[in-house]
Amino acid sequence: MIPLRLDEIARATGGRLVGGADPDRAVDGPVVLDSRAAVAGSLFVAVAGEHVDGHDFAPAAVEAGAVAYLGTRDAGVAGILVADAAIALGALANAVLRRLPTTRVVGVTGSAGKTSTMDLLGAVFATGGPTVAPAGNLNNEYGLPLTVTTARPDTETIVLEYGARGVGHIRYLTTIAPPHIGVVLNVGTAHLGEFGSREMVAQAKGELVEALPIDGAAILNADDPLVSAMAGRTRASVVTYGLAQTADVRLRELTTDEAARARFVVSTPGGTASVALSLHGAHHAHNAAAAIAAGLAAGLDFDPMVGALEAATARSPHRMDVRVRADGIVVIDDAYNASPDSMLAGLNALMRMKTNGRRWAVLGTMRELGDESEVAHRDIGEQAVRLGVDRLVVVGSDAAAIASGASGASGASGASGAPLGGAAVTSVDGAEAAAELLAAELGDGDVVLIKASNSERLWRVADRLVDA
Image (cartoon, rainbow, N blue to C red; front, top):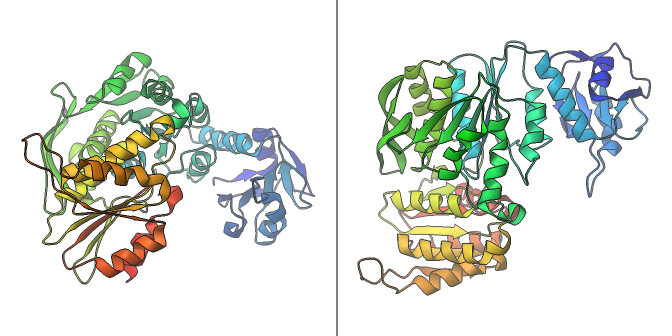
């Protein structure tokens, strides 16, 4: 973090110094939530969780070199007492930003693809100068301000992911880090359990563009009506992207190669180029177009952006991370998160992979879908069969509707009237059982997609297969 004295942090957060904290001593190391990450010059934020109270670890953090801790109760060592640790952390991040007046904030939100697009935005904006873009989805009231505090005096751009579990969440995050450029990717069915409808999802996601200044830019998906309608909710200029003919940054001739990597032509006011991504999945073409649109809005040069996108690889873990084993078996670890939209994108990527073997889909539960959960899971099972998956492994009882959807679709007729293929469906209790099944039955040339919500920890299956 840029150096700030403890008295400056106390004023910014509305806190008071305790435990003999020296008001003139500066924090110039990282701000951390894990006491084990504390180093010389750091600030430890003590959070009282459901199972663990961070205040209990404040002495260890100070012993490891932390200048102080930020928390809500006296832990007996140098600290700053505040009313709410999360709100105080946000206030600290905002104070850091106010000391970096030339640093630009680029925000991204959407129901699917936020973190992958953030990675691409990071690559694009790095062509213009020092850029902060975290690996992983640090998109809540803790992760977003932690990212901001990593900015240095020479940072030109901070790329942030704005997540939401309800209306008002993104609005709050924009008070911590007001965006100058805001990217909205899509409005899907993820988190319907919290929002209730896609319209309410759109209401929440649109809070990002409402926060933009008049000299800012809203980057909107022209192919999603609920996103393109957000143009009426911002005073900033609007740049659209997508397949639509009206898009300012338009995708054309979208195909994939034998490894399901997107190839396309992008036409923009700043130039036209053929683009060959290293990322797997046709959906990354839209993410790349969004990144180009944001870069153009910021005045970045077109050709270096295209080069950066082509060179970009999977940066955040468990997101379309494709590994080829020595025996030729391909493992697609896309197990960080799952919604109906991203699940279908993963299945499409699997089917675009050229292989001499079988295509396996190992699918687990999609969380936070509310009343739509059973229907959504059943539909994914049906889609897996219609797309032509050879082997479907359904993990966990909460995902049972995937298996029933697949069983119902097997043998049905497709649009041509011909019978659909029948995927062999196996249901297992958990990740360990799935890994054992795959270890025993995978054969030469097989390709396996592994996907579920992160809480299912299905990436352990991918780890087992890759390490085999």
